[in-house]
Length: 233
Image 1: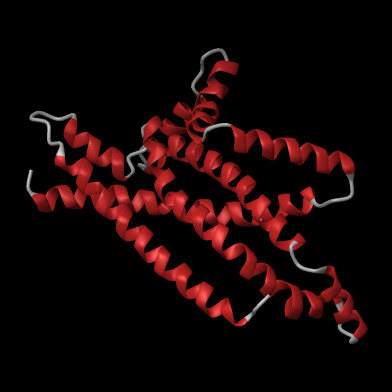
Image 2 (image 1 turned 180 degrees about the horizontal axis):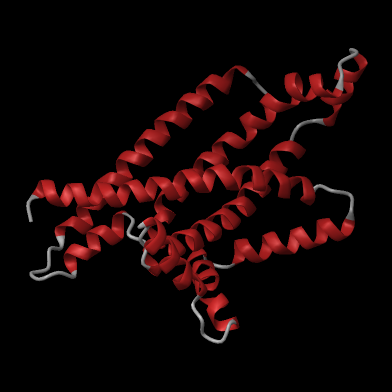
């Protein structure tokens, strides 16, 4: 195969990598925010359940979580592969390949990253001095005004560095999707190595796609942090 054909194949895999990345962010950020409020809740049962749930999710490797989400439904249903059934349905009705596996991966990623984000959000919110809220009340500001004009920007500034690290980690974690057959960038490259004759170099070439993606995100977060630097603690 030519270099152009291999690049085209890897770009198709990279498109799926980007899909996993963006969908994970879209769903995990609001879910993580909701979990963080639960972690700060004074309702002890909710607080305790979420605390241990986050602890379990953060303590188990993401790849193992993917395997659990993908294989456990079948084990609990007398060996019937639930996601395999979804695969067939999506393929025969919508011509979507490995759709069940992709949904399983997204579910695993969203839950995993929501738990990590929740801890970051909790730390950012609790890190703002409560005296500033009291000062806003003394000045006659409403709770909404205090949150929007006093609290929010400080929280964003505090969570931007750890959030940027987690989001960049997410880019690389998308490669774990190939463990259950999702043809993302790495899987697309591995397919060439398993052919005859085997072509190995696309596996190393695929790293360029991740480097470019991470480089763009690094510049973006650097710009955001610079914009937020006007606030000095």
